[in-house]
Length: 159
Length: 159
DNA sequence: CGGATTTGTTTAGTACACTAATGATTATGG
DNA sequence: CCATAATCATTAGTGTACTAAACAAATCCG
Image (tube, rainbow over all chains, first blue to last red; front, side):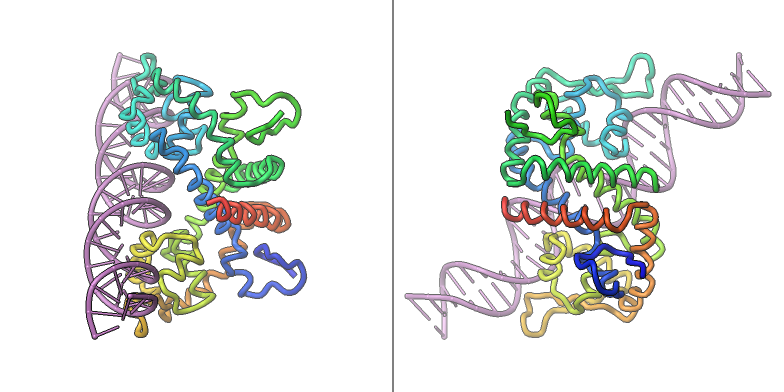
């Protein structure tokens, strides 16, 4: 017997109902969990004037400072077409500058402004706030993150 | 010592760099994994003329047939404002009908058409295709789904 | 009964996120 | 060296996904 969707019960037959049951779909759990967790960030990021994807860009820039659009896209696994307008909004907020790279005029260097650099201090309080609201242990979250990393690698391999 | 973000290393201090490192953020892993897995569905769902959220609505309707917008929203954890245009597109595709509920004229009943019902047969092949492309075992996926369900519950409790 | 409140859906507005197409710059190879 | 190909970013178009506001229908309650 081959089971083609994951079910809570380990015994019993995998009926066609089980196969297409919403609650058995990993993709559904993934979508709901991602939307839910990102939703937790919304009120926390709002005072900083950041959306969640914008926050991730800032995290990437705090790790390495002038980065091209392509470089950011690889780090965040986002299409340049998604980043392009997002970065313009971050520029309008005053957190980054956008300038053509001198050595390669095709590339666009995205760099932190003083304000963008200063924002990092305020951001230090964000992860603990989210962990607090989630109410899950760091161990649990660590295990989850490792599982998610496996999925991400599996997607890359299967794509 | 309190660790506020999950890190791969269990020993050593949690520096401010670790705290804000992109690769340590569960929200980032969640976002990338969700986008990646949903991306795997894209070529598989395309021949059926469905997007991933539309596919989830169909799954919900195959489980219980006439459902109101609100009911679907609770099942899928989506705002009615998100579902409203999505359901119009499913109606345009010929998979569902949209009619006001006779007993409560506020509510909108979404019901499968014959074509929508028939689509279920073709959908039976989707989960195995995705599992195949992912290349992860059903056990791993089951564990992951259970972890994600915990996160979803934690979000609901903390929101 | 009838005004006030609640509920269900829709619309408006903003912001991702994707694919495909465009345009500009750099790299390549005959 | 120069035509061709590859690379980088942007724009256009579609489809989520959210909040806030609008609207109609049903419910509540004095």
